[in-house]
Image 1 (cartoon, rainbow, N blue to C red):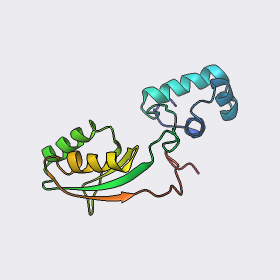
Image 2: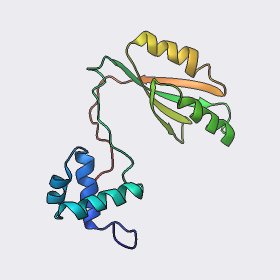
Image 3: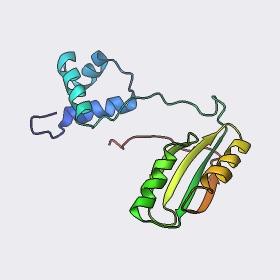
Length: 157
């Protein structure tokens, strides 16, 4: 990063390369962005410390691991008071089947992406945990049949 804290062209190149391949070596990354390895590593560390790089992880194949049921749950709450929204978000963080949770506007208050090994486990979760949770008014689920595109991150031109 530059002295002013603004991202420059090399920072953007680093972010693009790391988003495409988080396992790239520093030597290869440096070569791709036009730097020698030591300043490249310093830039990566600065981007991490500044929060531009939130972390690194492996993308796993849910189906191959036996998680054959995935769905989106659109959750409406009875009250949208800040304390109620925060309480629901905190509860969601303790549910392992919920893999992603987004507070949204429109027809729902939250959209959850859930994954389970089978339909019975998913039904159990929806009935005993999700719809039974305090302040939950409605739950509408949409089963994921196929993934036409999966490209997490930000769009680099």
